[in-house]
Length: 189
Image (tube, rainbow, N blue to C red; front, top):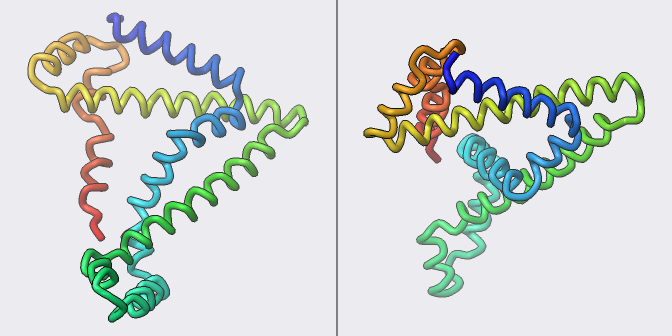
């Protein structure tokens, strides 16, 4: 085992311990509030925004907004020219997604932290799964950043991962985050 394998074992043990202590409810609340919650809402709006935008009732509402602003004055004409309806659409979508996210997290948290022996075990088990998922995502993100830096940094990092028992070198070379990022860049409004 190389040093990277020992680091992976240590981080996995640490995140499992934190998952057991925090549980799913508190972990979910932590990872979906603050800046994390903001980023989740932005990501959901980015991924679903183009699909929802093409729905008929959304198109009709935005057309009514443009019609209401037409021929009012020069400033309204300027707003129509820069497509203010799309900005209004995405701001509204962000607010709706944020409200739904907050309500869903509070409901899941209250169910997960029910004072019942079975739910306590399930809460701890799913807490471990949640925190291991977060560790996996962080690892893929760090690998992606290192590959973006490139050059000597990437070459040295690849050399340090050679001979990994857990095949971390293969994970670095075939980072699944890359295909997700490429798929997100394809979607356009």
